[in-house]
Image 1 (spheres, helix red, strand yellow):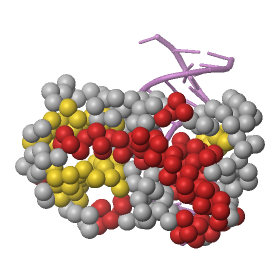
Image 2 (cartoon, rainbow, N blue to C red):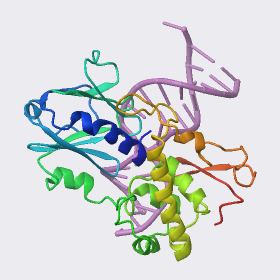
Image 3 (cartoon, chains in turn purple, brown, green):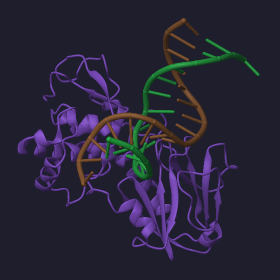
Image 4 (tube, helix red, strand yellow):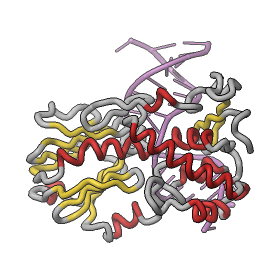
Length: 271
DNA sequence: CACGGATCCTGATGGC
DNA sequence: TGCCATCAGGATCCGT
């Protein structure tokens, strides 16, 4: 569910409501991907100063610490007052003076981790090796090209790895490669500079557009107010195998790369 | 170091 | 309340 746009949409829908709130209590459900790393009671009394995002992580700046939240494959966060009792897949509640933040995550690949600061080894382990932010100024086409030159893997898998640029997940990788007219199986180090330039622009474009549209709702994505996104309505290739390419009419193909589905137009996208 | 594969977990879907 | 296989938006760990 959550790639960068969904996480950013979540952040935007959450930040104003929770900023400035005082934490009243924290409640854990079933175990998530990693332990919280602190007694929930230690969060009590802290203030939520701001909500930031790094890659697909939500970062909650607290008065004395940093709370890292990852939505995994199936997570979503809600923020509201007067919530019902936690349901089967609600695994983390943060009760605050301004409402309750609740993480719902059926598959539990998500995570909630406490770190004393961004310099805490716990945070460094999770954030330290992340690539640049695709929508930030640091996403430079020349640097991107140089990074790609070091990889012989298929370009799509390099994008998913997030070591050069973060936030591009399985949907947007296929979409960005379509926009850039690049076959997902093309080896990263075989892409010419002009093609990398196009890819860099395509990544920015597709992610920015998805944020604008409120994210994807392939299955069940919703923001912190429970509203769905609409990006999937305009997917060019994702989950469209067998259907006509919106650009040339050729049937969209699908294949598996590293146990993930990939979609592409064999006519529009060149090796 | 870069790579490919297995792995965590639950639910939806489709074939039989 | 059928059973089984496959697939789903992520990211880490482990062997080579």
